[in-house]
Amino acid sequence: MNDDLDPTQDLAEQVLQLLQAAPEGLAEYALIQQLKERHSGHIPNLPLADKLVLFRTHFLLFNALYRLRERLWQQGSHLLQISPLCIRLLPYEPGAAALSERDELRDYYLDMSQLRDTDERDVERLLTSFWTRMQGGDEKQAALELFELDDERALDLPRIKQRYRQMVSQHHPDRGGSTERLQSINLAMEILQRYYR
Image (cartoon, rainbow, N blue to C red; front, side):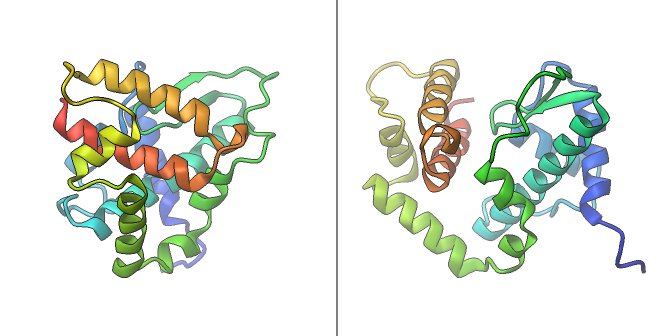
C-alpha cells in the first residue's frame, strides 16, 4: 500500500461527481446518504445516531470538501459553496477573494489531527458543552433556543433554513464570530433537520 496516497482524494472525487449531478446543490445529510448508497469506503456505513460516527463522518466529508474547493479554485473551474444546508458548485469567478481570507473552519477540517485525536469522550464533551451553553433539556428544544425560534409558532424547514442563514452570517469567524459558535449552529441545524423534514 502506498502511504503517499491521500484517502480523502478519492472521496473528493466521489463528492464532485454527486455535486455535478445536482446543480441545485445538496444538503450535508443528503450528500452523506448518497455516498453511503454508493458504498463509499471513506464514509462509515454506520448509523449517524452514534455521536462518534456522526463526528467522524462529518469531519471526513468536510475535509474532502475543503480539499476539493481548493483544487477547483486552483484549476479555475468552479467555486464550491460549503454549508451543511447547501453544498454546491458555482461558476468560477477569478476576481473573488473567497480563498484568500483566513478561514478557521477550513484550517480545522484540513488538520487531520483533529480527527485522529478526537475520541468518544471528546465528542461527548463537545456536545455537553454545546447543550450546557444552550441550557436545553432535550436536543430539539436546545436547538430551537439557539436559533431563537418559538416551537409554539408554526415552524417549517424553510423558516428554519432562513434563520440558520442569518445565524451563520452573524456568527461566522470571518465576521468576528467564533468557530465554536458556528459549529454549535451547524449542529443545531442538523438536529432541526431531523425534526422538520
